[in-house]
Length: 182
Image (cartoon, rainbow, N blue to C red; front, side):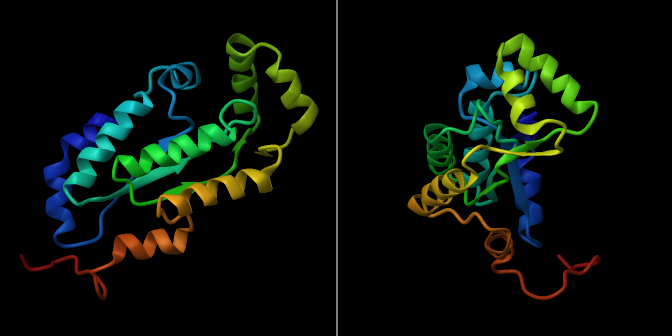
């Protein structure tokens, strides 16, 4: 539950005084109604963004992981740009993304059953396009990536792992000690 990490803001802030802290929130969409169909029982994106905002206000390094990006459901230009905008507005400091979904045996059957229930007809499109592939990149992945990185650039959010890591480690030098003095 995303609210739980915000509840521990005081502990995370105390830890961050001594060592790097990074808090990531996963998103497949910013839309609460769509998320309820995609991730039943999970906290809505609005709750994740509220928790992110609280942590960011306290100076914690937080951001978003856009995964999975579901072909035909959450891979539109509008969805990506709006999600990046909302992350930036909530004080997120980065966005990381892998533009697709992985479907291993077992998971694929579960996912296809959910598609049949929630989005009739989409399963057939997946089967035609991806067959039994494990890695299922969104159609037009280059255009998707340009859209994602362009939105990140617009809002000043790093998207590459090296930049994200450098950002959360900024201000912390050298090897951390297990027995640091307080």
